[in-house]
Image (cartoon, rainbow over all chains, first blue to last red; front, side):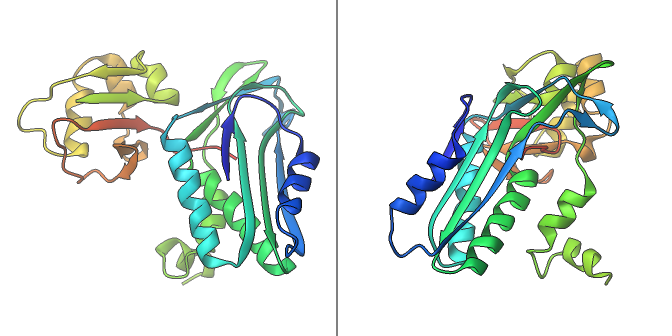
Length: 160
Length: 83
């Protein structure tokens, strides 16, 4: 399931709902992303997430479908917020449920790695020097490439 | 053709969206970006380094060589930084 929303969410309630839906679930892996109060050593006072309504939902659904093809999942959930958030606020929540832990852990990491680089969100950080758009990190592209065995980026990760 | 701009591309151009009719020799996403660069200083700033700007046609990622059709919706934006 995909939810793109301005409102906050309750991770505990989301996990409980996911697990209750199917008694064959043996484990739920989750990732909760938060707004940090510091970036590159400088204080961050707020962060605004802009997104591309419509395409965001399509991309997240595409990524979720890819995870479900790759692992035997009983349930999956991606919640991503947009709008202006403050340090400590929840940004993103990914939960994957499966009979066994390996599929849950791996698919959760896969979803986070993909959504960081492929879902159309952009972060604007506010600090003492004004507002600045967050730049992409090569480490995010490399994290995603680990899952693409045949890609050029994956070869770079492996040092080929 | 409808154009959408996001993040610093939107800020530099000063518009979130607009309707344009490119000349007939603009056939691809890459040629559209080159044509937009000539529309003013904001556009020139947004597309100073076209290789970092990403595009989506009708909400699907598109490479610079993607051919355009008259009714397409083209979004131009920086690399994504969600999560």
